[in-house]
Image (cartoon, rainbow, N blue to C red):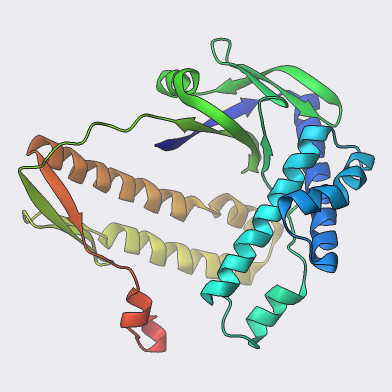
Amino acid sequence: MKLVVQVKLLPDAATEAALGETLKLCNQAAGHASRRAHATGVTGKTMLQRLVYDELKAMGLSAQPAIHCIRKVAGAYATLAQNLKAGNYGPVGSRRRTRAESAPVRFRKDAAQPFDDRSLSWRIDERTVSIWTVRGRLQGIGFACSAEQAAVLAAYRRGESDLVWRGGCFYLYATCEVPQAPEYVPDGFTGVDLGIVNIATASDGTVHSGKHINQIRHRNRRLRTKLQAKGTKSAKRLLRHLSGREARFAADTNHRISKQIVTEAQRTTHGIALEDLGGIRARVRLRNPSQ
């Protein structure tokens, strides 16, 4: 089972600047590779590497970061092709689909960048990493994590880690291969119905209300409308501060409810049965205000 462990980097000012320049260059290189892929129709990883590898090296990337930029671009085009095939951009000839097909995939200047063990080394006991940057390899960059996270990293970290810039801070997202817990035969099942008014309703009668989340959502909507209409620097600063807070609150609430349901199921040696929401958009069509 794959888990992603997130740790916060603690760089000094010079290191933070170097990391920012590295992300910017990597995404400029990815953008260049994307434009070449779109112009030539070459989107496969191997063929694209043959096409643009030397060009990315000439931009200042080392071998491994250049290869990871190419893989990132190839993966983006593979995802685009899957979405087009699934009809997620609308039918052939629609405006949205035409727009998606007619332009190369773009990458933000601060989009996440993967690093493998050749470009990124961990010293978990010392809570430091060393990483390749445009200013050379930087050693001894501190990171913060809990003791539980450190134990998972030390035992199960495998493969790549992503360098992420979010909310004014740098993070590393490390992939860990954690062994599956042994399966057991439950004595029964607890059914869970998912909804909006009530986030989850269990068959044993337990109801987890969504009233508080909906109140927060409505309050934030009114506040955003008011701040956007005001348009001052302080209003824009507050909007940036509020960005993502509602999503984090909802995610935390959902996590706590899920944990309560799982804990109760473990206590009673029950399994959990969820309703199948697959294809719900095709099965149910609501009027526009309710969609």
